[in-house]
Length: 198
Image (cartoon, rainbow, N blue to C red; front, side):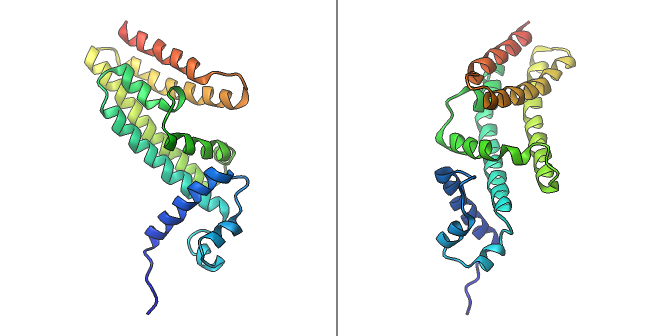
């Protein structure tokens, strides 16, 4: 009797192996044929789960991104001050993050071009979903502080501005060799905290 393989479990296993292969050789140097051989499965079996290298990369990035967001939410929940919550939310820019974050960031940097100005409906939907979740988290951080201090609702605009600034500074760090994104963004967040302190 043929062995029944759980579809979702197998995808998770393939994505985990692909993730560590991306870390080791880089996405650009990743050979789909070599990877399939390492899985000890036929191309036909692999294509049952993924049609292309791009599909595999997308699934890996999607899964890791959501895991990192869940981790960030847990870390933010442990903080009590507005400043600490902000710094945890933007930890990618300002902290020497753990190995898991560093490895995922390496992959995201490799595939960033796939996600900018894309016409791929699957990627566009993913981008929108990720930003919706992130906006929800940061809006709550700002909303809680506004309620706590009795500040006008217009202060909430700084949440979306901070997101835009973080994206802009991140892109500059990729383009400009000597751009110190950690220092620049930390200064920016301290500026936001001062605004809320009055």
